[in-house]
Length: 298
Image (cartoon, rainbow, N blue to C red; front, side, top):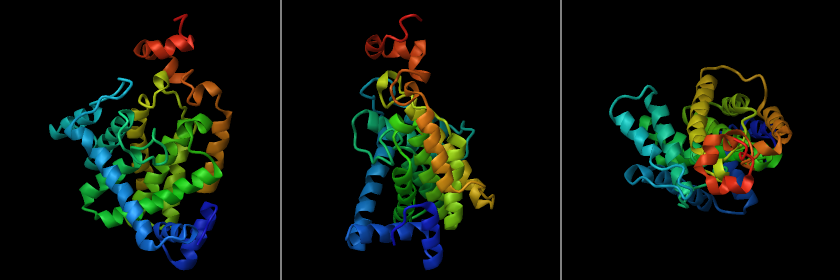
C-alpha cells in the first residue's frame, strides 16, 4: 500500500475503493510494522495536542518569546463574539485557531508541526473550525489527519516543506494544501477532488517568500497562517463544487519546488529581505537588525 506520487496514491484509492485517509493509514501500518490501533492512537494524540494549542491562547493570551505577537487570536474571538465579523463562521473560527497555534509556538509551547512549526496553525485551525461548525466527531477528524499526512508526505518526498529551501509557499503553502485536501474528504469529496484542492492551493500561493522579521518564526508567519486557512477553504470549496484543477498535484509540487529554488537567498528564511528588511521591522527588532546591518542606511 505504498505510494511515491499523487498519481500512485490516486491509483491505489481507485483500485481498492478507499479514501486517501485509509490508504495513508494502511501505509503507516505496513511500513512502520505497527498495529492499526497504535497508529490511530498516535494520530489521536496529535489531534489532542493540536486542539489544545488552538484553544489555549483564547483562555489566556500568550506573549511570544520575541515579543512580536501575542493576543491576536483573542482579539479575533472577541470581534466574532461582538457579531462584527465579516467572514463566515468557518473562516472566522479557522483564522482564530490558526493564529492561536502560532502564539503557542512562538512562546515555546507544545504544538504539532504540520508540516513545520511556522505553518503549524493551518491544519488544526481548519479541522477545529469544521468540527465545531458541522459537529464532526474526533474519529472523523483523525481520519482526515491521515489524509493531510498523505499530502505532507508527498511534499516532503518530492519537493520541500522548508522555508529556507522553498520560501513560505513550501511551509504555509503545503500546510494549506494538507488542510484543503483533508477538508474535502471530511465534507464528502473523493480522492481526485482532494488532490485538486491541494493543487489549487499551491497554485494560489506560488512564489510566497519566507521573510521572518528579526529571524523569528512569529511575524508575518502568524498572519500567513490565517491567510493559508482562507486559501485552503477557497480551494476546498472550488473542488467540492465540481471545478476541476487543470494541473495535477504532482506537477504543481514540481512547479512549487522549481520556483522555490529560484527565490533569492534573501527571501528564504534569512530575514534579509521582504518584510524583514523594512524600516518598521528593523525598528521592531533592533538587536537582530544591528547584527544584519542591511537597514543602516534607512
